[in-house]
Image (cartoon, rainbow, N blue to C red; front, top):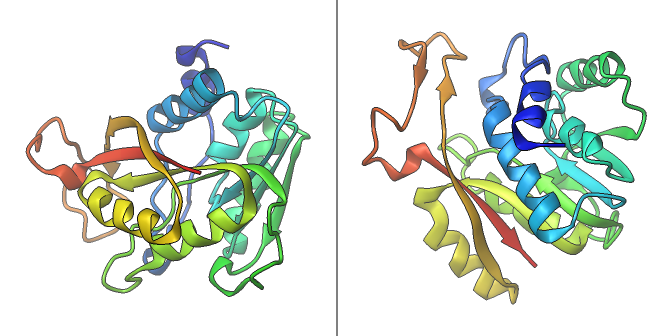
Length: 215
């Protein structure tokens, strides 16, 4: 499957109907999802035939994309029942059967609940805003316990140095595999513009999303 074809399919994935700000429910755009997955698949061969976990899966765009790239099985984890309902509907509409769903709080999992159960972990974790400070690092730490091979995670480029320090502390390697412009659609009432894009704020590093590989 070509990159543009994958992105075109992912544009048809339904997103949050009533996003919950406390859960930082921002959809992963089809462009970012497709670029991330295409790179993981073609450069690192970490999707096809692999057991993949998608942490904070939301409505399932990363899982569905991984399934389209012939993942063996992709398991989506999310705390929100409404998001998982949309995920399930998306999977049914695309007639995808190699996905499974787990509703749970990833920050409260037993340390060895899914230890090294997955070949690959993919995710677009919460940013870790003031309300959820450090949540992105909790997701990353959990992901590293679950993955046999590697974790591929999206983060604001402005947090890269902090994540690199954490990776060093945890004794894992980190590399940047892609840097993407992040177009944040207006999802909540306090968003005054239809979207915010780094095309118009090119000097703001927090408007770029880095796809990081940790292993």
